[in-house]
Image: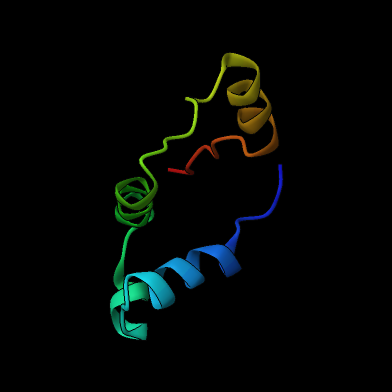
Length: 66
């Protein structure tokens, strides 16, 4: 899985949306994604089953101790 594209996200947040540092870092990932979609009109394809299973295998849920 590629790393999150922080450079591009910050370029959009600071350069295009003119957000302050405080405003940018207060955004949730969903809010940032919605802003990018609003600018570009693009959305990414939903995660397919194989990608989900790979993610679940790499980051399993931890069982909590009583």
